[in-house]
Amino acid sequence: MRRIAWGVLLLFVFAIPWEYSLDLGAPFGNIARIIGVILVLVAVPATLQAGKMRWPGALQWLTLALYLWFLCSFFWTAVPETTLMKARGYAQEVMIVWLIWEFAESPNDLRNLMRAWLAGSWVLAILTIVNFASVGFGSADQIRFAAVGQDPNDVARFLDLGLPLAALLLDGTERWPGKLLAAGFLPLGVASVLLTASRGGVLTAVVALTGSAVLLFRRYRHSKGILVGAMACPAVAGAIWLLVPRETLDRIASITDQLQSADLNQRVNIWSAGWQAFLKAPLWGHGAGAFVTAAGLAPIDTAHNTVLSILVEGGLIALVLAMAIVAFSTRSILATRGTLRIALMTLMVVWLMSSLVGTVGESRTTWLLFAMIALSRRLAEEQPNKLEEAFPNLNLAADLRLAQRFQ
Image 1 (tube, helix red, strand yellow):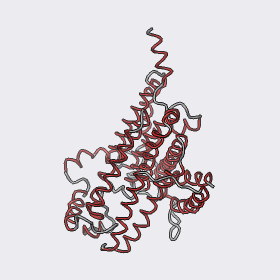
Image 2 (cartoon, rainbow, N blue to C red; image 1 turned 90 degrees about the vertical axis):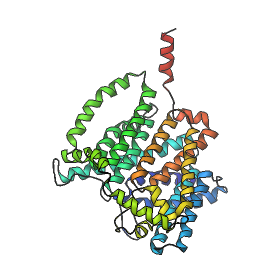
Image 3 (cartoon, rainbow, N blue to C red; image 1 turned 45 degrees about the vertical axis):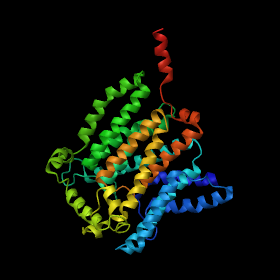
Image 4 (cartoon, rainbow, N blue to C red; image 1 turned 45 degrees about the horizontal axis):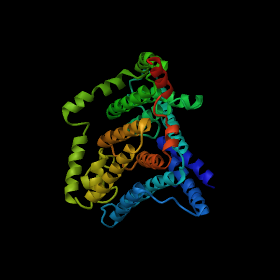
């Protein structure tokens, strides 16, 4: 039964990046929700059959505390129906944090979770390119492209997180399908981020690519592969340049203008309204999902800032719990070593940058990342040698050959 639950969990992780592209409507919801329900129906009996449950860690307790606080906000919220709906969504986030903690048992399991996440990112990237191709190459009628059912900014953020994962998995231990999965996503992911024309997504992609470059250089600095890769970069960049429409690139190039205008595409006005709403209920907030109502914004608006969203909806109490989760995750990253630490730190920085201009606290991807970070720390404490074997830190053979050459 646990093996079946583990297989469904991998399928669930695979579906998260592109979940909104396959939505069956009420009462079923999107593909990740459907698989999530199946996962719970399998995971609970599997846990009961085992007769024991892994003791929760700090992340699990903090996530549960944050969920319970937002659940309590139902008693004072201005929008009870919305708060109740958000509470159901938060329950799924708690589920992610618990299920990965419970069913992932080895470094190879962690690696399989990353493979599933990266494979799902492939689907998201392909759907984005399909959207571009369906409009027609060179068409000026549309300058932003994204997978059907998804917001371009969200697509860019999800794809940015896939770049460090691809670089981490490109470590020479994968067979050819795994190598293709990792190596192929780097140019595919970058091209897809550019097609979204998300200015914040492009800036975040630069950070993700920088961390990816550090990973690859650290691992292959004595290998001919790094030279071949460097020589291939101009060709790949040229191909991407020809693929992406000029109007899309012009929008991306307006990043400087947006910063100079101090408007950030109306985000500053939204943040100002949100801050005024926070001042009216600073301690306990206005209730989960009440940001738009409390700030007096249009229904289609969002906070465009994760911290501000938490402050308005859950007050300072919710922010303290959320910051504790981030602090614990950062400490957990520091407990790992080598390339795994570099990859996780890059992912955390990418997430933090995304949270500045997006509301990512309610995203399943956020809690998937935190769950994998907590798992990495546990494995670093319980199985350090196996973890290092699963994620090789250096090209030791090349280092030894280089040292022998100078002896």
